[in-house]
Length: 348
Image (cartoon, rainbow, N blue to C red; front, side, top):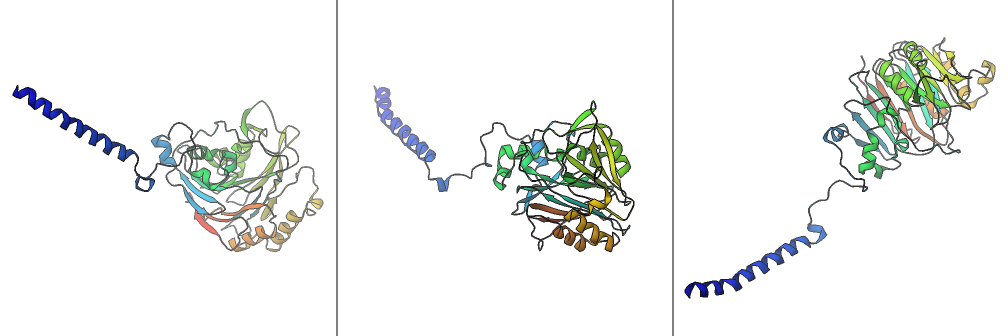
């Protein structure tokens, strides 16, 4: 009987303890938002987290300015032939671009470029693949699906950044080879070769070529696919002062203008069917040629930026000067000429 009475007395106490415990647990689940633990990284609802390896590749990502310009030092490998499906190019996209080489001072040649296009974020990307040369390049991240600063914080956006090495819009490698493109009316190169995208060929050149001559051999190896881009021609230059305008005309790859003077350049007309006398009629090419001729091709960084400003258009998104022996990179975004970002690529 004593045992039965003890059990009967303990039952209400046990029920009370259980009730209090339940109240505390429910209270913990409904604490005010201001006292909740910090939330995890922003998510766009895309399933699957980044692997530790991929997260490590993105660890150096930082915002440089509010264009926005971002910087990333991409550590690790990438498949330079992997397919990337960029969004379709609008018919009124208005591609422009001005590029020039100033090699009059052979001790300090420079490759300069304006990228003229509709507004979008830019990424300054450093890569150092184990099977290629280190390089620095600028990427228009709208082609990776990142169209605003907010996209850089989402899971989907960060996965897109893992493909950034495959889409250099211009760049320079540690041997001093520099590349960039400009749109033209048409481009049709050789068929029945290994097919690569119109931007991917520049990644292959940056990774594998030390000189213009080596880059030209690579261009002859691949079929360049313009399905997802406007037709382009390419401007190549190296630390020796050699340069070439590469065009795809009538199923052939043509070296339309090889550097035989201390400067060279390209804008948005095809050299192959534009006589030399008519090239100067183009306002941007004519202005660049005049300045470069007067300087005998020897421009400082300040003078190179000044010339890019002279030939800029209303939709110039970034302006960059690559020091092909110094490794110095000077970058201006959104035509804010008073604000220059400086970077350095270690040269071999």
